[in-house]
Image (cartoon, rainbow, N blue to C red; front, side):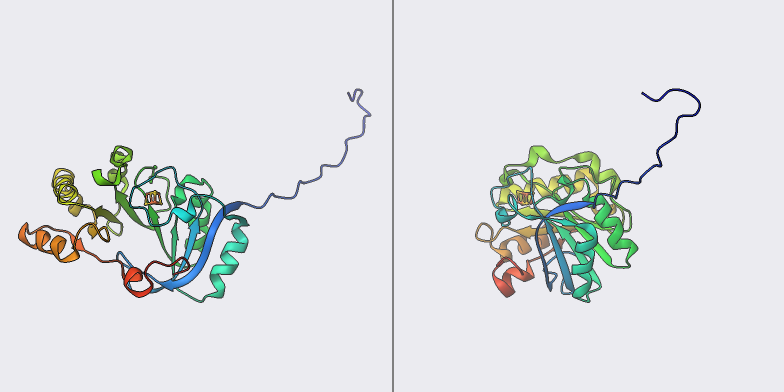
Length: 231
Ligand code: SF4
């Protein structure tokens, strides 16, 4: 204990800032295969981990492992590819809280930033410059109980809601929630078939028949690279 008025005060030493880090599965340069930015050359930053387990998930390799990387290093690696578009994906990127910092830093650096998120975690905290591509999980995913419906109130006109459809029952559910929540009046709505479960033409014909205010999409990267990691 230091006592007395003449006690010398030790100079304060500033602790070096601990680098803000994220667990990363992969960073790669490809063509955006879906949503509004489809076809653009894009750098993908895939964060590790997801609290959901959709039965048709095609990125299970991102659930575990990955490497810790400082956000400064992630930005430096993104910059090497010289792309305007950056997509932060997973897994569920928002499961790592520092994802919010990464998103903000990417926007500050001038990129056109999108975020692919499951719809199960709060999106109200995401930088409004980011275009959110938010899933709503239909029943056949096995995870529809995880939909955080309050997220719909935090969608901006540049965001997109994506519903992946594995059956006619999923389609009818999706048609119902779009109408009930008037989602198409908030932002673009995308319906996408699960490969091998619903024929793309079948889904397209249902949408036409019902005159739905939604956008049909196929995943371009599946057509180009059969969804191999790194593409
Ligand atoms: S939320 Fe996405 S990453 Fe997570 S299990 Fe579902 S499809 Fe896979």
